[in-house]
Image (cartoon, rainbow, N blue to C red; front, side, top):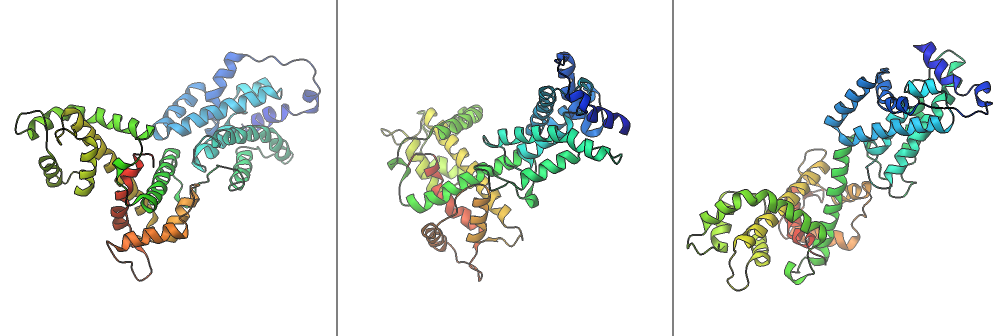
Length: 382
């Protein structure tokens, strides 16, 4: 195996190969088969079917990683073809396996996957492919195969570039997880940042005094309306005591509170009600009830996201978080930290409901209670 690796990797950079002027012809069907082989070669498996099984297995755990692995192998193979590499090495998948690792690492594992991160990961895959024969030639002089050392060199180099490339967000190694979780944390952080600023800027505004609902909020509401459609008829029949096709606020809010259906308080239910009910009757028909339930489910999901986010900041499990920790977390995901005025507003609103501890920290679940009053501003353009 060592002889095969050395021969195939070194052959593409030998002087007699580099001096050839005739065009190298590649079998494109074998190149396609080399894509899953490149994935399999991460574990020294040069079989197409084995590579496909590995891709499927990765897809079960992390679809983003599976896509990154496939594209990484593809990029590595194209790089080999572009530089006129030995066809046998390309078909064997040896130009793909380091690119597979590089694409996964930069494309979601150590960096949050977003638009700017995709070409960054592709560039890492190219560099992994190019450094493989180079490092292989150097190590070959002492009889050592390159293996994944080129990937280690490139991955470390790219990780050290964090902070120097615009809009590329590195993941803290202490909290590294799967790419999907990193992506979810990014969006929760963006929402939490908006919630902090909405509370500071619009705490005293009523949602119906603001602009129209945002496009994203409309799409999310339509999704929740779809999921609640099956139980809507039963709920309407249960609450429509007068058989007039309408539901009043008292009956609906009492049912929600008694069932402990989520975290949305009665004051916020009243806000949602005003946005959903008919102005003529001050009651909800079937369509209004659908809007009401969808809005409530959406706000419940946002509250759960904020709970999870703030609990994540409580690394010591004390039940408290500080302004400093909040700002560090916001800045780690590319968001601006709270300025002095926003910090003052946050502490002022929190102290209306509870007191700080001796270290000046806030109970994170009480902070989430305070933040939820700004959730309605998320649905509307200020």
